Image (cartoon, rainbow, N blue to C red; front, side, top):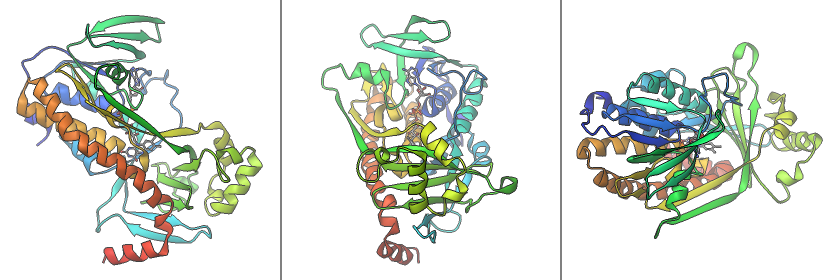
Length: 393
Ligand code: FAD
């Protein structure tokens, strides 16, 4: 049964305030509304569905069970499944272009490739259908005053700031959260951020003739090379989003690939089967940003019954386990269960939420770092492949 039918409409009509209308914020707004709350969402960027939005490349994410459960809870699972591509296995490409495969599970078990922008737009479309939710775009939260329970929002379109009050505030504004920044100044708030010495760059494998897929469509592709790797996830239009995870410094690193000829030479040597499929390699390499990879841990995630952090704002993890968004979506599932159980007792909801979620988030953060080594190195080890063969029997 979906949350829409489970929820008992709430009598607490105080509006809920959500800062950050990304993946987790928009899903959260839906869950809060289905529980009978009015919700105001402040999002820094323009509406991604508008012409104002300078949407760049489409980036894909792997959606797995935790994520599906959360989408099912608001009845949107089927709609998302229509635009998701199942990945039944990972396919490793060695340096001679030879392939080995490892299934993710039995028969129909899969993770799914979905477009980040597409999913966000889909959730915002659903939000639009909720009369209780108002989303305000171009609204950057610049300051949160926890004492006076106010937010200073900068309106990028109008070029001025306005102060808003809140009663219950949800921080879903990502790894560099402004809501968390205010909490960091409070007594006994623990916080750490840890960067990898690796950055990542998005590249593209072009679609084949008639939007066909030039390499296997229903797989997550990995080019494991020990100290670095490239991965690729399929798009519906036949192309693949590739991500190169590469050291910032050292012998093979971003600092050694400084000219188009160096990039081409390096890729031809280490990713020979991929290069012919990447017609815009050099251009993309120099035009697309090199982005960093951070793990954020903090605690507590709440302030009394007034503020709660969810998603990357409370637990940003590196992407190698494909669980950041999935864990943020699962936050919404757990919050919805607690709202059902505790009604308007927000203090209990927030306390139980953070106690329940923090150990899971920490475990996920550790596994995500561990899995980087597995993906870039161990999956290419013949002993590992043999072991996997034995496991899957
Ligand atoms: P975000 O997606 O960061 O959204 C935050 C929102 O808040 C944004 O819309 C932003 O504009 C807005 N905002 C920020 N600051 C403010 C402010 N001051 N005021 C108002 N609004 C603000 N996860 C997976 O589950 N599977 C994957 O395969 C996967 N792959 C990944 C690959 C890469 C390369 C990376 C970097 C991450 C990947 N992740 C993946 C993780 C996933 O992207 C994040 O966990 C997820 O986006 C978190 O969602 P969020 O809504 O909490 O934060």
